[in-house]
Image (cartoon, helix red, strand yellow):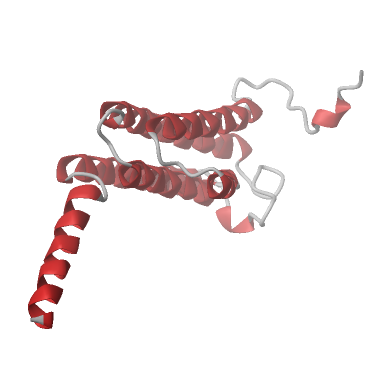
Length: 184
């Protein structure tokens, strides 16, 4: 009798887990595919920049700019291209989150957040560091388990990426090295 009860409990737990956790097959497959495409494009952008003379091996833990490697304009272009790819992915995430807003559960939004972390983590390879870690730290104190929270985190990532994009100054403007030069 105990064995029979254990089997029923195990089946119930398995059924409950299948119904309530994670993304549905179609959405999950689409987001996995999009995530993989973005990560592959970032690797391709990195390879193209390396062919133009950027030495990614010269990057240190904090220095990831043209001061530590050759190919300054190629590096800046590569960073902007990578940011544009990530922004496209973030729009897909936002669209899916808003679709799931009414009947989605927290595990679905957490799974979408994990995809966002994977993609932003791939930016480290091209020299855009710290976005994944800062977003992860913030999520520890305020979990990303609703559509609203996911869209909020997406906006924060976009703001950080926009700041990086502005610092690249591709239109040959004189680059400001330090923000501390602005005195009031």
